[in-house]
Image 1: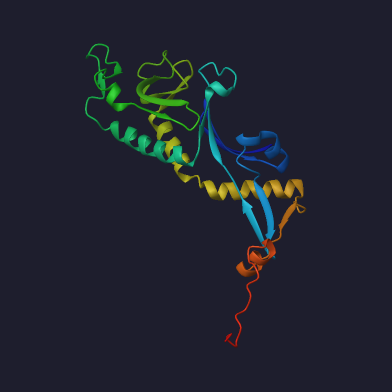
Image 2 (image 1 turned 180 degrees about the vertical axis):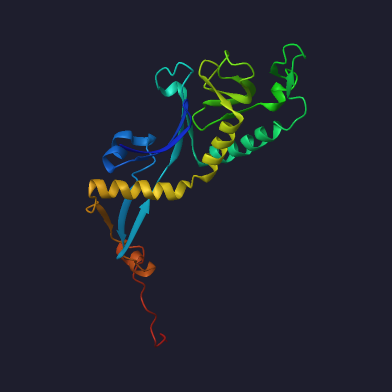
Length: 243
């Protein structure tokens, strides 16, 4: 198995996006057995015609680090295939629109004048989405306080959870908007073709195994019956009748 990764950049210091694609060779296909989707490139010749099939499964990996950064692992990454990206964009668009909801963010009182999220609107303004691997991404509106020592240094934003509530990161409204734009501008098939051509160039792949298939000869029904002995000799009738 060969994994190709193209870095797509960071949304903020704690969220990174990568475009990735796995290349399966014929050896990988044999080792994986029934779990394999087949080799990424197959060539066959049938009845003098050559058929080439390219199979790609590109995806985006969203990596999340906590405030203390921690270590990257499968628990703080979320895989987004083309179908998941479609539904995630729909939910992100609605989530961004929710920030226009009156009273979603409130000021506590005139004395403290602190910004907070209306607890009665948190659930209806949040969303969760499950990817193809059963992992969950959840986003809720939140107040972002980057530096508590600076008065008024707070922002409207969100908290992003990946695979439970232990792995999370805070995003400002601008970060969420930028995440939406980054996901929306990715063209899966174009990136897949770019990654596949990169693999071919680096591996100098020009000698793929070609499986040749010869068509079976077409046997007419009469010939087949004669070869199997299905027909029996029938005595021809006499042309001159007996008297």
